[in-house]
Length: 150
Image 1 (cartoon, rainbow, N blue to C red):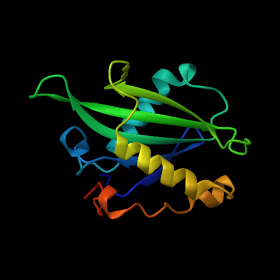
Image 2: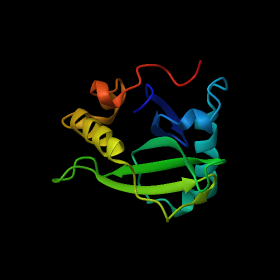
Image 3: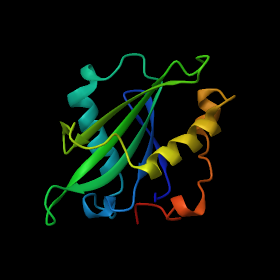
């Protein structure tokens, strides 16, 4: 399940941020912009390893614990290019634990794939600016129905 998404910009690249249920364990809901700040730091550290020519990102913020006591900040960063390709946009995924690349967990959960599919349907036939103006309505089983920040 996801909190209401927000659109931000990092280095002139739009970022749609979807905090998932559990992100509140590792990102402070009272600190407006803390997820976006974390994303900016990630981008600054890893921008050279991201695919070139990205037109927008979708970032999923979540939590994951190697042990039951201390969950880590996690980000699934989906990078999109070639939006008008014959088969749809090219999407590239990178997962980060804290500020480091993570390769031992799956690419994302099934809920994230469902949300990404809704975003893809919503984007088809629109220019980037029009696409970013509003988010698609997710099915009830995928949404928490409230903003992440208080």
